[in-house]
Image 1 (cartoon, each protein chain N blue to C red):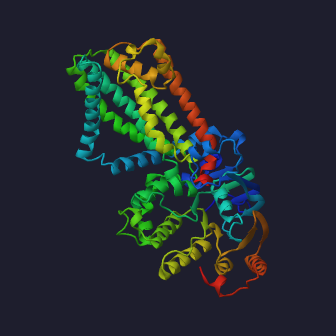
Image 2: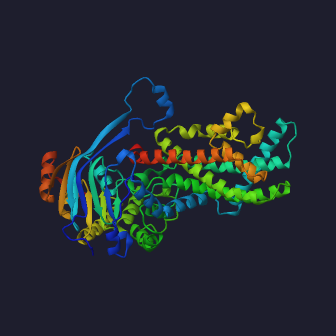
Image 3: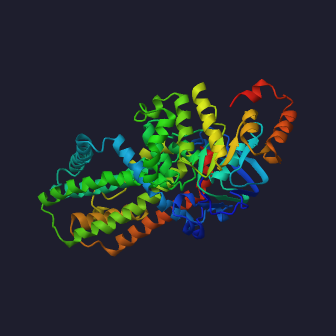
Length: 261
Length: 295
């Protein structure tokens, strides 16, 4: 389906570093800033989220990303999505990207599900026609027919997750970025989303999948990377990466890490 | 922080029919903190539907599309103009006539367009939370959509002004056409101010709390509750330093008194409008990379 030659990677991350400054105050105010004048107090911290990370994802590959909390997995996903530009290095992405990042769809709880889907899609660069074409399918997959015209503040957290998942997968992206969002909804929806994921994974789609469920990494992915404190620790077959990672964690492949999708 | 907007490879575009499957994105570090301007503007234009839809959704939430919503939109500034007229007339020992009422109304409507843009945009970035965290798009669309909302509320008030203008016996002539370029300048100024306050709000979350006071002071410093020519010489600096000073002077001259605005107020208006726009746009675009980690 692609005019790109098979050898050219869909996602190319070259020597990428990301550092950002974040505020230590929860809500920085002018008042605090004025009161602080002259008292040299540390209020911003520089965070080195990614350090010289390089890897490639060829077309049709499912790349698993594992790592402890704070290892830079989410930052990596945001960099590939173009939300956080790198401080050095270069990211090249060929194809339309759909993101299912940790926080899901729906940015304004006062707006209805429909408005959120439309606005989110338009912001992501879809046209109205493309949205109209896929809208019914999204609603049907999320099983939210009766709720689309209600404000999203009335949704349960499971409903949020279902809608986010549906938007990300129904849009038929060439590149799908998924950040720990597979375990949404009830058991039935989880099964359904896992089935959909498996289908997408076999469909020649390029997928970057962040998950703490090492079982699904092993099952779904063709390759895996292990991030540790912003560095790429390992880039290998999923089995090898998961084994090394679990050995590192010293938890072993017990029921907790393997079971959950 | 979409600040690195995707570059589209024309060769790839030509190769395929479906435009959106053929995107090639390159994300690289920004030089001098600014994203590459050309691709940024292209992406901005490509996603203009987002700003329109956002503004339409906001308006619908304010019942803009219902009859009473529209009525309120017109009644509210009319009442306001009435109250200010009585206030100023009392202070002036009852010397004000219908012509002044028309001046007050035209000025208030124009002023409220700019101040509504600022008021609506202040939380546009901080309120965009998850959208900013999860989607790469030019963030400038958020304040721009607030300006579009304010503009949609401004247009019907102009229609209310027309009959008042005629009833007050003010001249109707080609000078009224100045309304178009002057409204254009207001749009430029409002967009710049909107980008400035919406990005400042990210760093100073209490800005929205004292914004109403700043806006109130701005109104009193503008030639709305008085004619610009009544301002004593020792306060001339106030009009020059006020970004709306020259603009509203020219506005009242052309719209209300049927005079061609004088060059000095036009120069002030153009200078301030584009100055604020460039400052706001540069500040916003150089900062928007940080928004996703500052929210």
